[in-house]
Image (cartoon, rainbow, N blue to C red; front, side, top):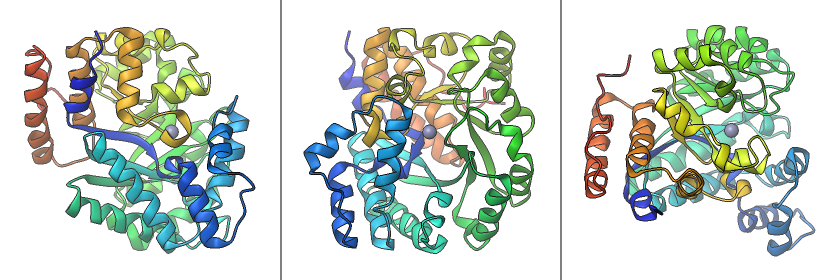
Length: 348
Ligand SMILES: [Zn+2]
């Protein structure tokens, strides 16, 4: 049974979203025009180019797109555009990744992009009633010293940044490469998350937990290959921020019928559904819920569990969690769901 109405009406949090990955072709052309750059393509042609065939194809267009982001205004508009989309998807809280190194290496100042993003987040808090947290993400294919330098730059914005993350090309760049950077981040009072087990093996997820002391794992689909790891994720209540359309598009799991999210829920793992780079992977958060619901024929109860997991797994104060969880009850009860876990107490 398609559950579009339920999916749309549940308030949810989005916990795995790269702001640079929300750059729609139309925005890309607008930003390019502002800086006098030529993309050499129309919006239609760009849209077609977004149908890349593999990771390299994706990265080529992704970095070309990122290069159109130059000014405070560009970053503000990009973030505002995402937050409006989030609002349309009934996202009430977002935890947003950004990649400082991708901008610093193009000569953009840390304060330009950080302040642009933060001012849009503040505006959305006031005018769209969407709360949000910022997660500073390190590019794992660059050396650790480079990540440590970024942390140094972040010092004056420390009260605006909630956590650090780890993204980009996973294979050959295990979490342990960043042990020192994550230790420094912890000492600075920042929470920690890391992409692991997307293309990389389960051992990368172990490293993220044991060496980087992460609060959450981003993706984590490969945990399905390791029963002991599954037990640990369930026991320690370490959430997974899963992104079905991204995993399908990049051929991590080519057929969503094989997506392990139901198995994770059955084992008591706190799985959540997110959009990753929605402009590039074919959909925002509701489209991700819809795609996985259809592929696995998820029940209303499973949908409600995924949505409440997103709130429980977020970095918002307990009081705000309770407030949102209360609002989830209505749409879920309307679909006959009574028994899903809304308790904050079950979280270790
Ligand atoms: Zn990601």
